[in-house]
Image 1: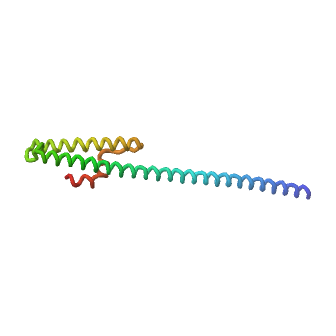
Image 2: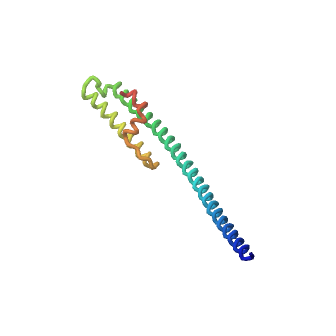
Image 3: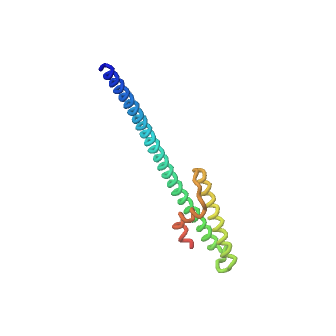
Length: 139
């Protein structure tokens, strides 16, 4: 009888040990999940910060582009005013178009360089699409 009791006690102790091991694994998994959640929150915060920074940079670049375009247009108006460009002639129109295209191309390259510094890849068509409201008065 004592043998049966001793065997029962041993089985009970083995089950308790196994349950403790299971609890430890469960607790370890819970800690791992919490660590992953914390890391995900940190990554989301970093992503959101980078997006806000990108938005601010795009706003600054859009503002600068508008200033450059305004300056270019003032230059064209001045040139027209003093008769340096003859808009009625084909050559005058072509010269005006080349002047504006060159200024716009320089601006786009400058914007690309700034965005590349911020580790963002941008294609020129994306810039034109995003800035099309600024460009629409020119068409």
